[in-house]
Length: 266
Image (cartoon, rainbow, N blue to C red; front, side, top):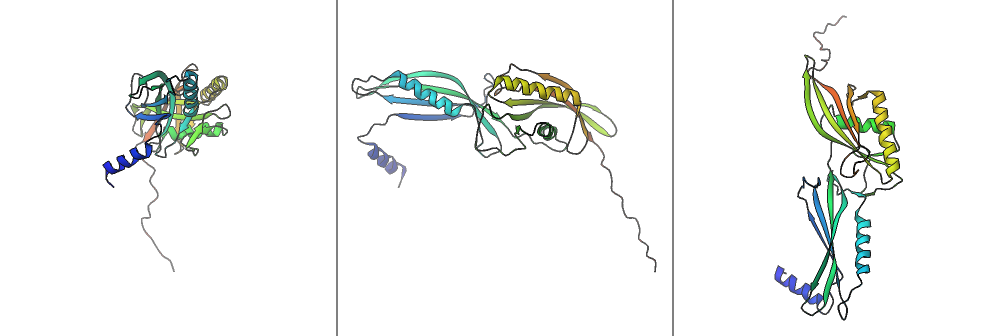
């Protein structure tokens, strides 16, 4: 069956029935620097009027709210290594007339898409070290990159979710044994309870300040050089804790002992 035949078959199946209520999804993964998001998702909800074309606008608003509740405050895992979340950006009313005289009314709801990309790099890995440190200090938290994420994870007051993002890396200095690097790590705390989110961020920041360093996976130290906490930030768009860490990349590795010669005695 070719495309034309398929379209005609589908059109015949719709004949005599209403094409509404209708929901249209559109996703645009074009990065917006102004809105600090990875793209946008538009949900258009359309109703068809009955008789004189009048539609209860309260029904439209109720449906819009239902979609917002279903899509917001969730981490979505499509299985490609990156996670996404949606935050409401705005709603526009939709009204148009059909050829049959009936009125179409609805709303176009726009969400910003935020991406939380896989942060694993190479050894020594500052993100893996930070993930392990936070998980050891707070095993009750769900740490992205260490814990298995479901296809849909609802953000609620019953679970704090941690995401560590590598913001930048800069070579600080060089010595004969190592090249020293300064890296900035942004720590996100996903928690809908603002009071608990503030308390959790303060606890993590205080513990790092007291410890002063984090042991990396190769057992080398990663020192906490600077730490800044922002308790007022939008937690889905920007992290609450910005940490500058200092660690070394070894130029030489310890060489194993080499067997030079073998002698046998009888």
